[in-house]
Image 1 (cartoon, rainbow, N blue to C red):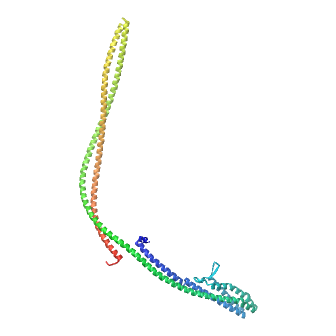
Image 2: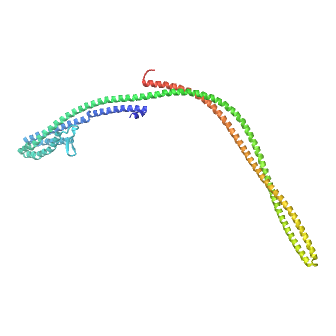
Image 3: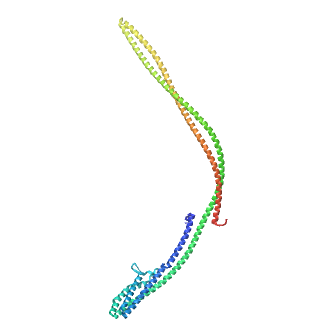
Length: 497
C-alpha cells in the first residue's frame, strides 16, 4: 500500500485526499438522510404510526357501528318500526366497509400466518389479528341471525323469538367482538407508544452514531491529510534537494563548457590556419600529378605505336618464315629428284656393263654395240657424278635453309617476346595513367574536403563562441533555478523572505 501510494503522482495524491474527504462527507450525508427518512413525515416510522392510528380509527368505528347496531336491534325488538330498518341496513353496510378496510392492513404471508402489516419492526400483534379473524368470522353469522331470525320474527310480531335470538348467540358474539376489538385497540395503542419510543431511541442512537462517525471522519480526514501532507512535503524536499544538487552540477558544467568552448575556438582558429597551408600544398601536388598524368598519357601513346610496329614486324617475319618453309620444301623435292637421277645413272651403268658383256660375247658383230655401250656407261658415270655433286650442293643449301629457318624462328620468338613486353609496358603505362588520373581526382577531392573542413572549422569556431554564450545563459538559468528552489523550500517549510 505504501509503495502504491508513493508511486502516485502529486495530482493523484491530492485527488485521493479530496476523494477521501468527499467519501466521508457523502457517508455523513447518507447516514443523516437515513435518520431523517425514518423519523420524517412520510418516513417508515411515521407511516407505521399513521397505520396504527388508522387501524385504531377503523376499530373504533367498527365498535361504534356494532354498538349502534346492537342498540337499534334492541329498540326494534322493544318497539318494531319498519321505517327504521333502513338505518339498520346502512349501519350493516358501514360495518361491512369497515371490516373490508381493516382487511387491507392484514397481510396473508404464504397463506399460513396472518399478521398486522402496520406493526412493522414491532412484534406481531396477536390481539389485532385475532380480533380481525373474529370479526371476519362472526359478522356474517350475526348478519345471518339478524336477517333470518330476528327481523323475520319481528315482521311476524313474535318478539319473544326475536329477543331469544338476540340474547342468545347474537349477544354472545357481540360481547366477544367488543372484548376482542378493545384488546386490539389497547394493543395497537401500546404498539404505537412502543413505535414512538423505538423511533426516539433510533434517533438518539443514529444521532450518537452520526456524532461519533463525524468525529471519527474528521479525525480520519485530519490524520489522512497529515500523512499525505507529510508525504508530499518529504517528496518535495527530496525533489528540492535533488534540484539544488542538479543546479550546482549545471553551474559547474556550464563553467567547464564555457572554458572548453574557448579552447575549442582557439584550436579551430589554429586548425583553419593549418588547413590554409595544407590547401596551398595540395594545389602544388595537384599540378605535379596532372603533369605526371600528361607524361604517362604520352608514353602510353608511344608504347601503343611500338606495339603496332612490332605487330607488323611479326607479320613480315611470319611471311618470311613461310617463304623459307617453301624453299625447304622445294629443296627437299630437288634432292629427291637428284636421288632418282643417281638411281637411273646407276641402272644405266649396270645396263651398259651388261651390254658390254653381251657385245664381247658377240665378237666382231658386237664391236660397235660395245662402243655404244661404253659411251653410255661413261655418260651414266658422268651423270651419276653430276648428280652426286648436285646432291652435295642441295644438301648444303638445305642445311643453310634449315639454319636460316631456325634463325627466323628465333627471330619470331624474340619478336613475340618484344611485342609481349611492349604490351606489358603499355598496360603498365595505362595503369600509371589511370592511377595518375585517379590520383588527380583524389587530390582534387582532398582539396575540396580541405575547403569544406575549413568552412566547418570556421563554423565550429562560431559554434564554440555561441556555446560559450549559451553556457553563460545556462549559468544564469541555474542561478534562477536555485532562487526558485529557495522559494519552493520556503513555500513548503514556511518562513519569510
